[in-house]
Image (cartoon, rainbow, N blue to C red; front, side, top):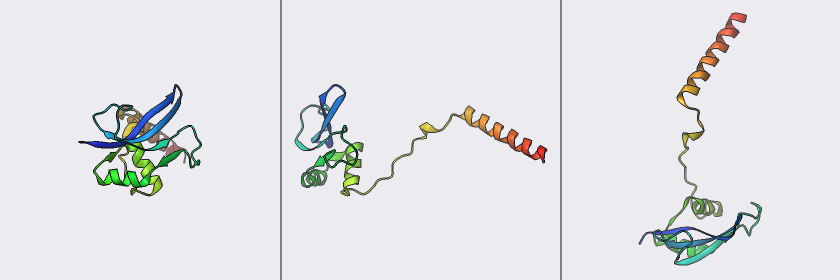
Length: 119
């Protein structure tokens, strides 16, 4: 059985509240889970200690049993010092496309040529 430690959403519309659960990866997000491990309330300030609450002993148990944390849970565990900080793939979505990069090079070349001619 592929086990995951993930968030299960609760709360009303625009007022999310999450339970941190260990569940079978084939179950739906808010469906059946094996054990509730904690809570996450994103509406609280980031420095609030009630924002993320986890039963670390049970989390360690599930990790030792082979449960895989989702990205968000992995970040919570890194912040708690349970897991070492992982290097994440830096996606290139923020970089401009090929044509925009070519235009930027041309513009930089023209600016450089203009500054040399002014001297």
